[in-house]
Image (cartoon, rainbow, N blue to C red; front, side):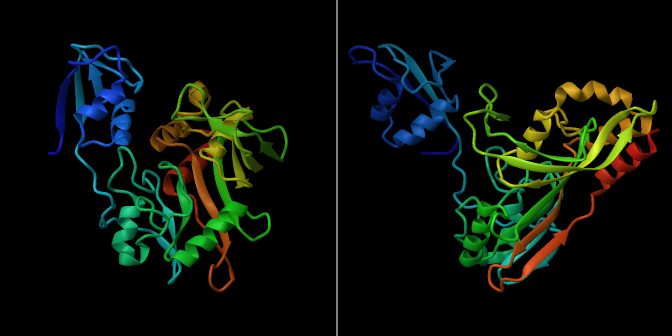
Length: 332
């Protein structure tokens, strides 16, 4: 089968109204049932020129089915010469200060240009087979637009140890992960915790949400600094957050849940865009230039997987968040 194929199946010689996936399975023996199901769910199968995303859709004699089969993707990511800000490295692990905009591992829409591609080029064969084909060495991740510290395992023993530490989240060990978050509004107390389960959003599948059906999630926060608007009223604050659990988008979801979404977060805080009008011109310009959620992983502490030594790293705010902080402090 060649790349980028567009296949056509004309339904004929059948009785009744069989399922779409079963018809395709009998006519396209080169494609597995799971592959066909994935193509249907991805909207790449059309019946009478109308996309059908239901494998159980019933076709009729005379229907024309078209299947758009995308070019196959290499099973393993390739090394790419991408600069890395390495803050620590030995034979067992490597700690990266990730810039915003860098995707951690390959996925839909990001098959190249990821941190994994950069790590493969930097570490060579040492990452092979650790943590799965698409995520060699990856123990945890940061969102594409979140900057800061991230640790990667360089061998299986290190991967197992670090994975266990992240699963434990410091309950019995020394693991700590700290984040600095610029949020809208100022909490009415100095510190607190958000204990609210997180699950997929019921309607927007790319989002997470606080839901009773979700997994246990706890975020501890403390106010570091508060900022006033030019009229002297509180408008934003800088929080220090530490995770007790590690759910997808956890800090972003939890802070939005308590009414203090991250500044610049177009997914979980879009209704707060109007608050930007309360900022001074300098702050508005710094926020517009940010073009991402204002979240930075500044602290990482863990037990070395081989020596048992407690290691801790800190990362300064990147330039875009420094500029935002300076502008908010000036309140101009």
